[in-house]
Image (cartoon, rainbow, N blue to C red; front, side, top):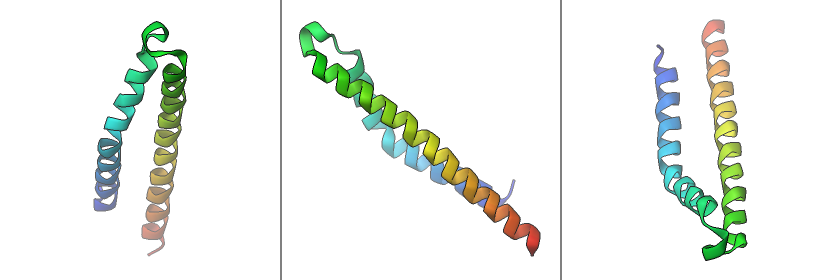
Length: 77
């Protein structure tokens, strides 16, 4: 594996690790009982989890694109 690829994986891991507490909070909110916490908290949790999924997909897209561009640059040299 190239150093660039390893750096990209490390960056992704660091970002996901930093983001994980927020994601866990949203999971808790999503699992909250509407009877005890109200429907609004659960709705916030659902919205937050969808935002987390979108964030992870976007992060993968950005890092994969960056990696492909680096590989193309390496091939051209």
